[in-house]
Structure formats: structure tokens, C-alpha cells
Length: 334
Image (cartoon, rainbow, N blue to C red):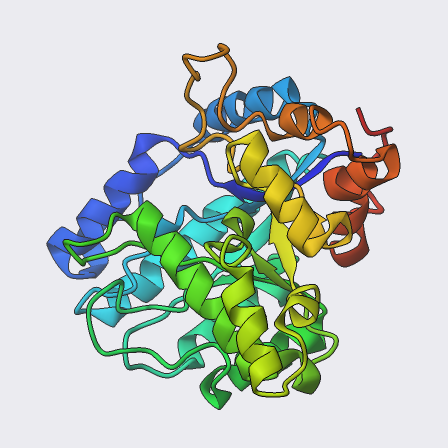
């Protein structure tokens, strides 16, 4: 079974028109929740699945599109309503295509705010919607103040405790970015880099050893700059950074063979999970060879030093160890 841990909702335009209505009406009750028919949901869901099947993907963990989260909006009630609505749309996809999708909750977060709304929504998504993971934004201010505490700070402990209690993995994924110096794609990479350093320096996995934390996009800049952090850990007589890194999980949403090879060599295939984000930014034809940048399973198969057991681990076995996929029809890896 090939399992993609990094997918985002594909939904018809009327879903995102509701976001515009919420903003325009400031959450007025008459702004109207749109009626999205089963036929429309099925149309977009089936189109999404066709793209997964092109890569042989059997199961995808489905989350909200992060740049749409509105975490930094000045009216938090709008953001809370929107995130709940999108989680409901994901739940409809999971119900419609139970063999293919599992839900990962987007959490309502506000800059400078508490985690109360995030925890309430996590409770709802796990207990009522049957979701199997959640996505946390380490920078709810989206590139503008106030500066959030790092993920190693006790501020985040209630969320970690809840994830351990429910047995759900947590994916660290930034959202939009207001800074004129960063696109949201660059912001993702920068926040992932900061998150890893903070989690390791804060000894989070010593306190929460059963917590499964997924860092997407190959771990930001950390694998490339590992030597700096590892040298600092030796200088300060601390646990080796390179060893602590292997207590986290990393997805493979890295769109070159060179990047994939570096990630696999630094953190090992035992700590990598297939992530494509398909359909997403990588669904573009490479002029060099006519493939898509997000053809990750094909790129993995081009790495000749990877053993077959390594490929099977990355393509599905590692994900099956932290996500409940046993009720899906088990299929051989391709």
C-alpha cells in the first residue's frame, strides 16, 4: 500500500466563495453557508483521486490548504468558523471516498491567542469526525507580529498532550505569510527550519516520547545545514543534533532527486514518509524530462542505492506505523 501523508483538500469554487462571504459579512448569520451538492463534491474528489492513481497512491491523509487558513485575521471568530467549515468538507470527502482518504484537522489559531479553540476543534475532529491527525501552524501571525513562542515552549504542551492522548500525529505546517520578504512557500521552509531547532532544543520528545511529529517539505533547510547544528551540540556537550533529528518524521515533498537523496541520507529511510502534496504546487511539467515535479514515487525509484525494503518503508510502511490504515484494502507497493 502506498500512503501519501501530505495532501490538501480539492473543493469546488463555491467552498471558497463562502470564505469571501464570511469576510464580507463579518460572520453575519445571513451570510449563508453554500449548498455544495454531493455531485459537485464527487466531481472534485474523483479528479483528485485520478491524480493520486497516476502515482500509484492508494491512501492520502487529507488536510486543509494551509495558505487559506486566515490565522492572522483581525476577527478570530471568522477564522474559527472557516476552519471548522473546511474540516467538515474534508469529513465529507472521507465519507465519500473512505478507501482513499483519511482526515487531518486544520486547527483554529490566532496570533497572541490561547490554544483553547485549537484544542476544542481537535476534540471535535477526532471524536466526531474520526480524523487521524492534525496540522499546527508555528506562526499564527503569518509573518507579522506578535512573535510566537517556539514549538519547544511549554505554551504548546497542551496540544502535545492532547495528541498523545488521542494517538494522532501532528504535522508542523505554516500557513499564509504577510511579510513582503517571503512568499508563503518560502515561509513554509523557514518555519519548518525554526520548528525543528526549537523542538530539539526544547527536548519536546523527551517530555512526550509517544508524540509523532511530522515535518513536511523535507525538513526545511535543516538537512542541508545539519553540520552547523550538529557542531553546536558537540560544542555544548549536548545530545547529538543528528541523532535527535531522527526522532522526528519527515515527508518527501521535495521535488528533485538530489533533495530526496540528501534527506534520505541525513535522516534515514526509517524516518521518512511519502508526501507529495498532489494536486498542488508540484503538479507542473518539468521541461527537462516531461515529468511532474511531484512525481515523488518515481523519483524514489530512481535512487539506485535505496534497498527495496527502504522504498517500501518510505512509500507506506512507515506511515502505516503511525496512521490507522489497517482497515484499508492492503495492496502491494509498486
